Amino acid sequence: MRNQLWLLMLPPLLYGISQYSYPFGQILSAKKITVSSLTVHQKLNIRKAASRIDGVIVRPGEEFSFNKCVGPRTERAGYYAAPSYIGADTYSSPGGGICVISSALYQDALVAGLKVTERVPHQKTMQTVEPGLDATVWYGGADLKFVNDTKAAIKIDCNVEDGYLNTDLTGDKQSLHTTKISRREIGGATNQVAVEVFQQEGDGAATLVSRDLYTISSRSSRHSTLANRISWSKAASPNGNSVDR
Image (cartoon, rainbow, N blue to C red; front, side, top):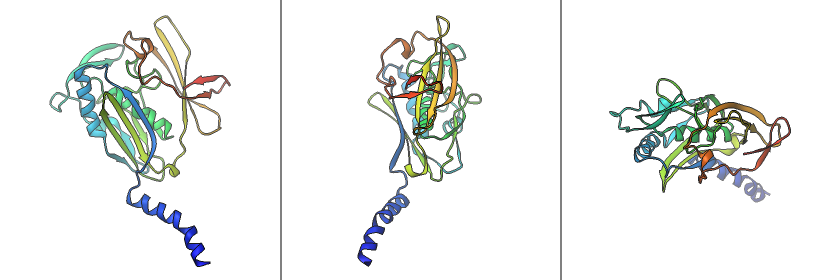
């Protein structure tokens, strides 16, 4: 009888030991975006910012701030002037290109079901990210923030390899409820597109996350086929229509 009881207790005991020794063994959400089409300086900026984020641990109740983590994007800090969107215009500024990281982390946070406390969309569509799933950042202004509202710590993995930006949130899956993210393009003026993004947990009803209006950029993914195009399954929008994720 004692042997049988020990065998029943062994699996949860081993799981507890593994979680205590290394609590970041499970991938909660992951994003992979191609950056091969970006300029050399944009890629260097992305690598620089990714190195500041990689390995960051967000503890329960703690708020992650992209700007606080990455710091000022200046030439003195090692960033290069590169194309970036400021409002509806395109300029060359130090740190140009790193919005692809904040956009990837925004999607990771949504999929992991974390509470996003600040996110600002671009005014123009991006080359690397589908409209509605982007998050612009500007030091001293727009920021991406989300709270770890789970009971376990979460680690952020962020790196560039073989022409792709890879971001992962790792931790304990039992501490959160992952969600499905869906998007729907509504249309608008000739050079504009309105996008709605929904979040759905399990078989529950989808809830509206954001509704954004973009000016279509000639360089955006809307006009080209990229490796990071959304190919998720369909989810139901609040009005019952199917939405391509």
